[in-house]
Image (tube, rainbow over all chains, first blue to last red; front, side, top):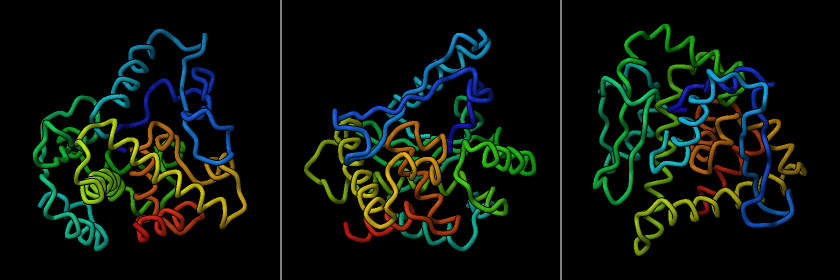
Length: 64
Length: 183
């Protein structure tokens, strides 16, 4: 938990959580879950930068 | 050692296990994060860099962690482990890096190769947990993992490690422990 809870997650109406399978297998059969987050239309502009920074950090070579 | 301010007996054990691999530093700022673990071709020694700005006020740090446990951002562990949480999570990152190098000496020290290997480990953990508990992946996630664990495979690994070391047992931590022991 090197990263604190991002601002965009502090309101459940501001983001969506989508479960995907990276290997094309049916969800839950077998394998594990991957999640993708996206901002909703209700997300204020003030959290958009926070969201982008968080996604960028999670996709970087560093582990937080 | 700075970490003795935050770690209990368990943390000392983790540190000893990893003593040949780590470099731990305190920096004035590590972006906006609490800490970052660095590894790969550009890092001949694995590093954990802790953010001084986040740690200099111990009570505020503890309250922040407690709040993030309540919010589900972090794994559900006892509140008295709040100060141990972040160092233990980072130890989880050290662990997957050490294990990757140990079990794949001929593979490149690249993110893609390491992530593929961690994907395989996580698959085994979920397979074991499903077989032992009868729960499906969605139920396992719903009951036992944090939002932060959903960020990517490495964070899931580190979060499972923190939960294993700081909380009571559940289907995923038992499976995680078994897979680690069987490596």
